[in-house]
Amino acid sequence: MRKLSLFTLAAGLALSLAAQAADQWQLPVSSKKLANGLTVLVSEDHSSPTVGVSVVYKVGMRLEPKNRTGFAHLFEHLMFQGTPKAPKGVFDKVITGGGGNNNGSTRPDFTNYIETAPVSSLESILWLEADRMKTLDFNAATLKNQQDVVKEEIRVNVQNQPYGGFMWIDIGGLAFEKWENNHDGYGSFKDLENASLDDVRAFHRDYYGPNNAVLSISGDITPAKAFALAEKYFAAIPKRATPAPSDFREGLNSAEKRLQQSDKLAQVPAIAAAWKMPDRGSKDQPGMAVLGELLAGGDASRFYQGLIKGRELALNVDSLYGLTSIWEYDGPTIFTVFALYKPSTTADTLLAAMDEEIAKVVKDGVDEATLKRVKTRLLADWYNGLESFLSRADTLAKLQALWGDAKVVNQIPGWIEAVTSADVQRVAKTYLTQANRSVIDRKPVAMLAAPAADAAASTATKP
Image (tube, rainbow, N blue to C red; front, side):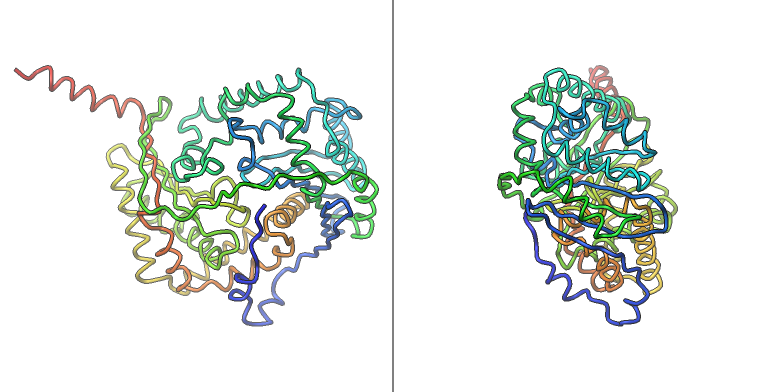
């Protein structure tokens, strides 16, 4: 993955006072790179006799093969289906039998596999992770089974849900130009069915080597012990060549994009409005984090107070950063605002109200009391997300994979604190423009059918 320098960001965002730095929670982070390229991270904490483990591979939806939409997600499922040494079912049985649990997920820029368990189970977890890093049990029956599982997941989570995934799948397809960024990472049924065993073998060979991965351990263990265990279980796995990614960079959009969709399950209309974001590592990224919280971060946000409480146009307002978080991307992503709105209003009215709130920020900035409240909430969310060993290990692994340095975890609070009203104004003026906006207006089928029926009736009654 392409790595951007931290120097541009860090130069302007260092804390101004040593006292502020002293007040921050400095998370302990130790790192070591094995000879085969595997990066190992350890965050020592003896407050509980447990550990969190995360293995992040630097591959996701952006790097899946063309005409194989959904393949990175399908492959994530296959990673739980057994190896020649640990047949199907062993992985889950060993971890849950030891008092732990596990999961995995796929995003545009990474795929992560996570476990939490008593520290006594750590060696078993590392053996299992190393085993499936070496190879999988590639067979036609397992592939067919997991193709069906993913298709059923799409039916349940997208096709048979009101609004489906239009606010996190379809909106990206509208906003982005390049295939790597705009295709459906959940996958089409045709592409999923066409995935072959050769595709699976090649994907594991190309992207699941130790040199394309980060192993992170957080909890009741010392760095020395954790590094020794990593050497014991992973050092013998040879590094493998990883294909160079295509150039999936995109600039901001220069003209608004609009799309109307129908929804047979929805009861009220909804809108998804998305704006392309600053690059990861840009000086504007922390300002975007503060601006997103200011506009759409809960009941005190500008959009909630203006669109729901004030004008009474919307029924709810929510926001998301593509499929990840404000700090966990390494390619083009979007800030999306999703809202259900009253049938008595229109998408244009809702967008105009959003534009009005954004214009206030561009013109007047943010008062100090509000800015402090927003930054405090962001900091609280950040630190809360690091409390559990599982989340901590996973966050560190992602930061290492995406930023090239897990110690960014201790810089982010300072970047948030350093954001000024002028920064928020600049970001709002630069990114939250109509030209950089993509909009999907999703209406219940009945709402779209009514005007068509009225028009037909009017035509029929004309002499």
